[in-house]
Image (cartoon, rainbow, N blue to C red; front, side):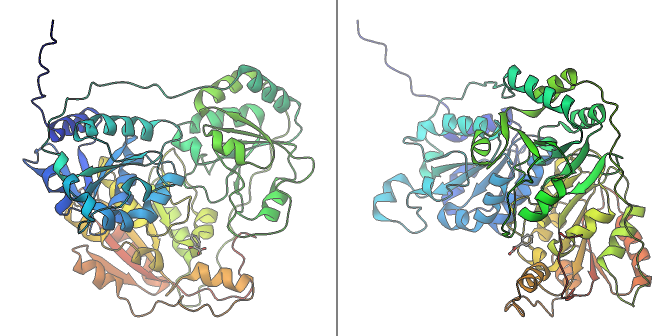
Length: 543
Ligand SMILES: O=C(O)C(=O)c1ccccc1
């Protein structure tokens, strides 16, 4: 008997995709639209919010901030090849920082592709690689919803990260079946024998140390790290250039931030006999020095969810695992220790009298007095990150966000997305150079009344690059001076209220005004003039 005729689906690709987005909590779309996305927006439903980024890297960074705030993947809609190209610096950060961002990129009509049409993307799935975990243009329109569902599951599985789907513009009106909802439980735990071996090494250690990396905060394991550290009386460090804070920086066991330079890192860890890196690649260097990664006598264990990271680390014993179940097991296995606790790290030195200029250290001291402990702080001020860490301790999980990867222009829009996630007021400390990569996001912040207080430390250039040049005797470095920009006027023109301060005496009140705003007040920007630090001895990580 002949099979009954197959009934074509009565739903479209668009219906099925929108239903999937609702089911996965992706109803805020960060994007920048063009003609190759138009059919996606037909009868655009009212329960979706479109957040316009005026340049595509801001759309990706805002989505990343949203994802980090909600704990769910965030959706980005980009315009074919050009839009994807603009976005790639932020995609790099999202990949390295393990942020689940689901990107749908427009593409020209399938029928036009053989003719290399205007706007058409050649080999679209290759373009964002290697900085996406998944990249496809489905073979048929009807495959788009299931491919997006797969992409979403991949984005959300550990290690998390961005995924990419190219969708030809004529696919959206074509028929497609709805996607059945599915659940993937992605947490997994290590080989029990490996964890027992680590517990024995920790029990036998004279001076153990834990290194908290971005994975700790990412996997909500901050509490477990504190419990393990207290049980062991272990010193706790934060891994070099970590994009998150994985430990309460006011805790007596907290020792500080490891430097991203091999010889200094090895030296900082030399006092310890057993070091456990948690969700941390540990050897994230910014500049090269000739040095073994660790001193003789420092034994390394490394726990992370990424088998690739376990493979590339040069030394130590890696245990591939998600952190919470592994830490739970370790807490049960290790003996409570009565070894002497490490000494507390010294309080920051008091500031010398001001010479009439506002130092970054003064800004950080005033912020320490003013910011509530649960403030969400976004940082992108490379010249002053060390001053921030030294003087402004972060407490509480999920309260510190920066790029752990280095592509600048991330912080300013990241703060917008983080603020839109729950409407909490976010403080973003950003440099003048950093701000200019993505300054259009101030317009989006103003338009959506994103509650962000921007504190823009203006040292008139690419201070960190100049400092790194001086370190190796290259001075001056061309292209590192930025002069003549009135950030307060620029922000004002985007609809973001702004103020400017140049003298130390005026700073406390200016900060009070900027920080007094609430969650319904929208963004504000305070431009703070700080001197360019041109001291020849500048060595940011030696302190
Ligand atoms: O080193 C650099 O060039 C750079 O761009 C950078 C990025 C982040 C922090 C410091 C410098």
